[in-house]
Image (tube, rainbow, N blue to C red):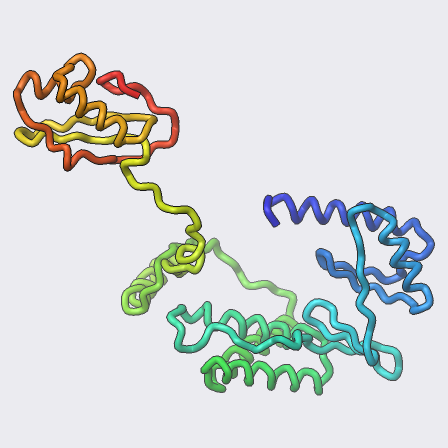
Length: 310
């Protein structure tokens, strides 16, 4: 979405859009919107006129429609069907291209990440008002997805039981459990190391959140060629070969350019142009140019250092 304000601004825009559209004669009586997906039943004979009215509201906002087929219409992850008595029933919708592939059981991810997709499906199973037939069909689909990804029946049983208990508990009480502030610590996931550490942290009231050190972003998204250290600017050092003295300098230009200037000053013995040259003139020592290097990259404007260089 770009800026963090984008969702808020988009929602404000759509709210204003809807307020203006409601003043029009053909605005649908039912209008349920989630971000940019809208559920709005319209009689077929008024469909084209309603669409034209909506598209005339703003020159950059254009709507498209999806018509029901055989009394069924997908909306987000729901499949909404019309029964014989004209009431609605709900099922779970998946695109025809869905392969039910999630994080596999043999993947090197910690347990919570492997369970996340199945917790989401189990939560939806118990919170979407489905008829018994659709409920059992979705439940079988969850077990099938688990098998495809290498999990056994017990893995799904445990997750479904947890959500079933929560649903039953929520239905008989309005009391909310006491929630204390949770302190979290982030650690890389290395099972043999982090699992024992997690137990220790838990005793101290700390919740461990795992993170991956090797992400696709790190592996694939470094689109720029790396700049060699001597092509960068910043703080650099030039050591003496005959004594422990080390010259530290800072430059806004390429480090190799500034070091070359020091070399030229040493060769021509211009001690007034370089502190490195002044050191060789005073002590007759040799400079270890092979060990000269960039110590820290600094992109901000550099201050002058003791030799007055930039």
